[in-house]
Every structure is written in structure tokens, then in C-alpha cells.
Length: 111
Length: 112
Image 1 (cartoon, each protein chain N blue to C red):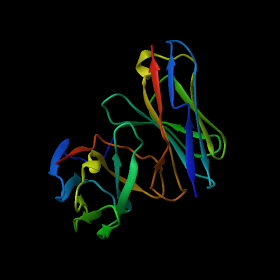
Image 2: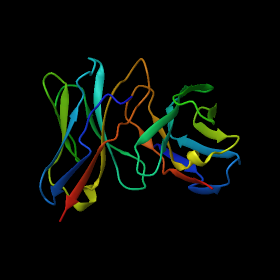
Image 3: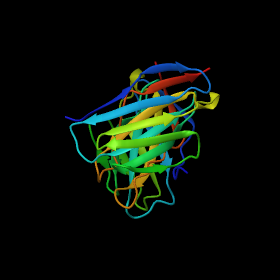
Image 4: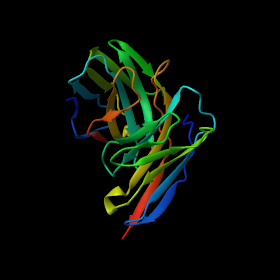
């Protein structure tokens, strides 16, 4: 079973920041937070991951709360091509390799 | 660089027929391998994962099976397909000690 909770859908205006929340209140100390997105009819694409510090790459920023029970994926300037389903996942790097996807958040970027 | 390929991309099969989907990874060794299924309008369901040759873990009891005959080859099979097996099947790999998954292009199966 997925160990994360995300809103089923969100809207965002093109050019504005998209802030996608994720709740992972039962996260363990050795589990990382990963974000993927899936554009229609394609396989999911890795976006970013982090353990406890905030992370940024060319695609997005990841903000993890100090207690690590929730996180937010930020797309700084959303475009129409960012319309997709966004998945938040928690998993450890050792001791098990299952990666369970939840239902994700369907982000609609509108012109 | 690493690449992942799966085939066929699309197939239409009658109920009761066998199935074989193949996935290969290039440019890496000892990857973790995964099979997921996505029914229309639904999320990703983990079917099988493998951490090494001949080591398969099944997540959902069903009429599907998986095999890993070589380090970088992962095969999904069925002896007799059901209507409920229709869906989008995705193969993925990750480095041995990384949680980052890389997905193939997917295989869309329609069972009639």
C-alpha cells in the first residue's frame, strides 16, 4: 500500500508556480521522498528526490518539512507541458526494493 | 548511457491466449527490475520486482508470472489471458542501491 497521501487534482495557471503537496506522516528515518510525473500514455519520469534537506534541480524544487511528515514539489513556472499526474513516493535505499505508487495528483496547467 | 527497451509496444490478444512481454536494460549491471500495470484511468500497480537473476517477488496473486533469465532481461508471461489483464504494462529498472526508477516505453495490451 502507498504510504503517501496526495490531493487527486489541482489546477495552475500557466507561468505561475505549481505547488504540489504530499503527506507522508509514517515516513521512516531511512526513507527518501521521490517525485515522478506521468504524461498521458507514457511511462513515469523521475523528477527529484530528497531525504531531509530541500533540493533543487532544473525541473523542480522539493521542500521537506523539518519533521519530514510532508513535502511540497514546486514547479516554479508551470507550462502547458507540465500537465500530468504527479506521484510522491517514499522508499528506503536498502532492505527492500518495492516501489509503490499511489494515485498521485493530476495537475492541469491552464492558459 | 543506460537504456531500457520493452516490446511489443501494442498487442491485441484473445481471451485464453498466452502472453509474453520482454524488457531489456543496456548500459548497467545488476539492476533492480520491475513490472507495473496501469488499467485505463487508474494508477500504477506493482506486479513483480527482481533484485537478481532468478529472484522474483510477486506483489499481486494473479495469472501472470515473471522471469529473469539474464541479468538485464525481465519477462512477463501468462498462460491464459483474462479480460481483466488488459492494460498498460510498464517495465522499469533502478541501480542496485538507488530509488530512482527509469521506465520503458510501455506495452499496451488489449484482451478481447
